[in-house]
Length: 198
Image (cartoon, rainbow, N blue to C red; front, side, top):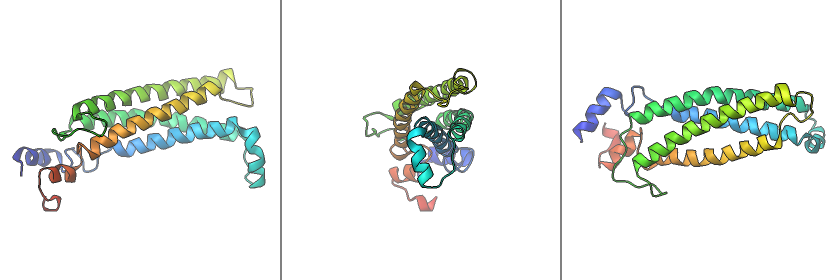
């Protein structure tokens, strides 16, 4: 077995981190869930006159303002959680030892993928914070007396961020699945070792 790899695992742990389970992938899913729910509820709230009959038919007591409340508080939580998601990701990628002789399905090497994923994370954090500020102004200033609390341009921006999240998530999946970043079994299999004998 590669002595350098063993030494790294001895000092940092089995996944090349100072803790057992990588934190970043778990926080990523929390960020995604909060942001998707925020935009989805704002879309349903914006389309409420069309949805109202369906809610009534299903006997679901819902108000438009409650839908917008869910959208607002989930977006606010997404902005806070995403800060920790990006910080954990930058810390964990700084400790990464990716497989060097591999190219991703998109044709990138590990370092290029890590740089794009890191820059993408900071970009998405910036966009979520900007959207939270924008949403706050809509909620408390610009549209506080209007039935539809969000602008259509805000919803379009949220859908654009969904696309960026898809690209970002795919780059992150490449890091784990193709380059073995913080996945011990992948690294060992690439070296021809048995992960069950570690």
